[in-house]
Length: 303
Image (cartoon, rainbow, N blue to C red; front, top):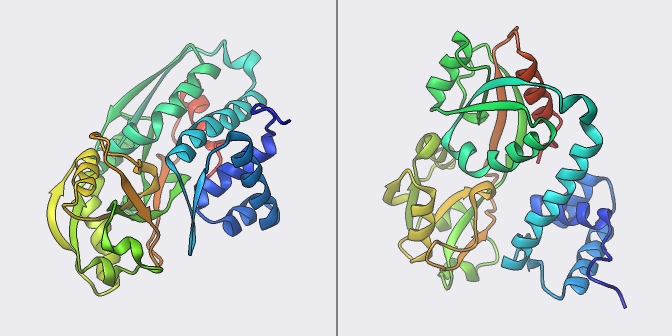
């Protein structure tokens, strides 16, 4: 009889790929295996764990609540292994100094904490001086040298500015709905379907502008009933049935703070993903600590 610990790194890699791409076929392409290899790995994991990790949908899959919990553990295991084999630990533990990093609100809250913990394991004597900044302040800080590196939504950056950038995460946007919502019964969802329902608009990190870009491109307008800069407020309003929203998987959680279920479904249109990246001034004279931080982030796989 197989034990729960009888799980291979290959199975974890295939599961994480499926979780991050929401389709077994796309995950298979990303890790260069057949779709049946992904399906088999997920089925084996579900059998060994005794839970369903994914809900199978007409146009892909999405994590169950148990799947979300297991995903975070699996991602941590793979990240730790990657750090162990890619970082020169004998050298990194002796590096000292500090690096000043500007980051947007969304990056600080939903992306950076795990990476910072990994960086500190490899570089325990390097201090990361984090500053929360909006896009305009971050762009100015890199150009005037007051910050060495920026972490932000690169899809929002001013394309006219001479900044170097490296994509770190590409997070799909999906429709969030409360349990029991009428749209959950539809096999395929479009922006036109969403436009018929009250909409909760997240304004943080220029969320309103980026949202309206793809709505306007489709020739549609959302029926906005609430605007808020708090992702948790959006989650709570959706969970309580006040409206629906479209946000990235990076900030998705299946439960509100009050314990109400929030569902997520893909849309048939090509909604642009959220793109998060590392940014710096061209020709910047990096300190050793900044160089280490930049190299560490640059080795992280694009999700």
